Image (cartoon, rainbow over all chains, first blue to last red; front, side, top):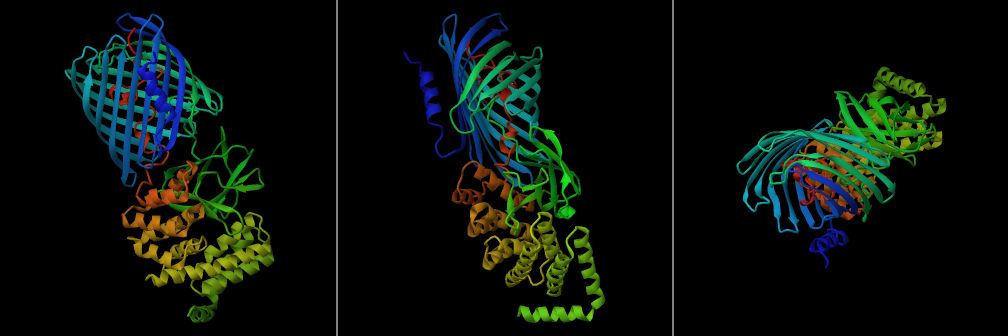
Length: 361
Length: 245
């Protein structure tokens, strides 16, 4: 008999959200071992699917998983999340977010959460600060249910090759009240991605701090080995804390879904501009290939100034420019002028291009 | 009309030969310092002087010549390019003036010339001038329109995007983001019509900037295979295993 969850997962994977952009669909086959805090443990084979999508205003994800335990019995999980954000001022965005998640165990245990709320985002230099408040409901494994309210303050920085994320949150789930703090870091190479997260909880459902490690190795253009290990805190739906270890093989089913890692594949942006002062910026370019790279532009009478290689095709320059649009071009290996792919440009009137370096106020 | 104005400016400059000579010397020094050969320096200095006599930004012409020389463009092509550019600066100044800005700042004239050089017509330049709510937005708006046109949106669509953004009261920083937003959409495989439609609808800046909107949620902490999404808020990092044992 085909499991209903498998049908849902298959439907999600073969028909990813027509008309949306950047769809990414992937399928993972793996195994895991988990130990629950109440001394139960289990080993299972799992099949999971994931679809990410993004449009100009909306981003979201749908995921589903089916697990068959070696001791017998099976379980399914599914969930979806959506975030819509619109810029309302310089570096300020407001929007709505919502998510729902659920688990069903063969024995008949059904649990899940659903919530929605508002989010405010503020970009401050290279940092992104978000504040969200959501409300919803949860159903516990004992079939009881209650209201759910959560507030989250998160700060995040994405840079070429790495990102860092820290969050504090306060949650009210029926009679339970607790606060969480977590921090995570991720590094990304051409074929290898690794990350770590850690957190602690105070209040109800509190316990020992948790740590999770994960890594992914892209072994083929559209396939990656994934591994994760760590602990997890108690879940307000009734699962206790415990330990897990997993190993899987993920295959991308659509463009951009190679995803060696834990979510959408992250491309290094072609250019990252960070203000250092009123009239100085730190610029990082992503240009693979050349042995040397120099930058020239209006500010230095088009005199090529060498860039510093950061490895992985990333190059750093500190430029004496203020807010505005500045024409520039890069000189590769002392002989070839170029504008990095993905950087806005205009024709230079000489048959080539001039890049536009935008420095925000 | 332009000829008359040019003659008047030339006469004015002739009446102050010391100032003109000093400026020409400054141009010449800058070009020589950058290593341009003497004959090219002479040609560019003449073009710059003529532009200055017409009240056009000579500094832009010098910038253009230096850019060409730095890129190892042959001298005759540099001269031809700066002559065309000087003419376009005049057309840009006229286009902005026809839209009601009688004495535009140099940056606006340069930006208008950039727009005209990317297939944006004089009337469309005027549309941007009239839509700019604040003077500081005008030059960036014109440059952004030029960049969008150069990125394949076409002049009409590019101007439409900028005008809509200006009318919506978007600040200058958001205007400056538009080319990057368009580029990102292009990299996602969208065609020009779709990009223009989405951007005119306001779905541009911020929402699609890398690390922008979804960055708020961030990559959720990992955990179990097929772990539940959205638990970054209610269960930071604490993905539980699928099902019970």
